[in-house]
Structures are given as structure tokens and as C-alpha cells.
Length: 117
Image 1: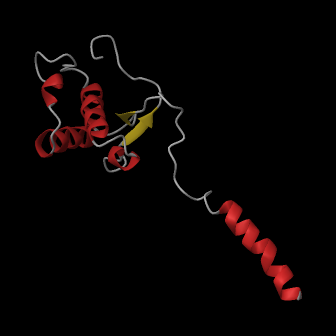
Image 2: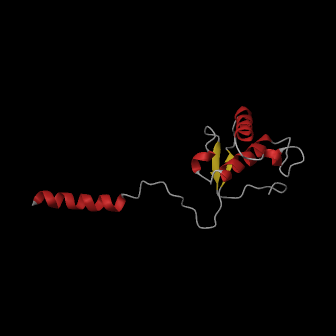
């Protein structure tokens, strides 16, 4: 009988903690998330992100092209962040779709600026 007493607490503990290692989306209903470039990302990586998203996906990058609502020829960080976020949103806001070789980060604060909303 002692063996059963040892296994019972273990089984209970296993049942209680079985969901604790699952990755969950801990956002409140209605809360948004955005993918942006990590501060300090090298220019070479920002350009790579822009090129990969704009040439290999269904994301329409006109928004960061000349005449687009988020066009900013001076700030590559903003342009890359806009495109990275468009891709992330297009892919259903899956965390893995904001990696960009370690150069993306999830924000729960809307990063939009005055002209690019």
C-alpha cells in the first residue's frame, strides 16, 4: 500500500501542472499586439527584413513606398517596423512570425506615429 500513497500525490501534481508549460496568449480580449524592429538592429538586418517581406509574401509594401501613408525615407527603423508588423498581422499575430532572425519584438503598446496609423 505505501507505493500507492507515493504515486497519488505525484499524479495529482502532474494533473495540476500539466497546462503550466503550454505557451498561451496572455493578452486581454481586445488588446492588440504589434511587431516592431528591436532597437539597435543593424541597418543590414532592417534592409533584409524589408526585402524578404516585400518580395516573398502577400504583404503590400506600398504603404512605406514614396507617396505611401508611412513613407519615411530618413528612418529605416520605422519603415522596417511597419513592414514587419504588416507581415505579423497578416500571419495571424503568431509570435514566431515576429522573430526576423532575432530582430523583431512584440509590443502591446500601439507604436503608430502621427502619419502612419
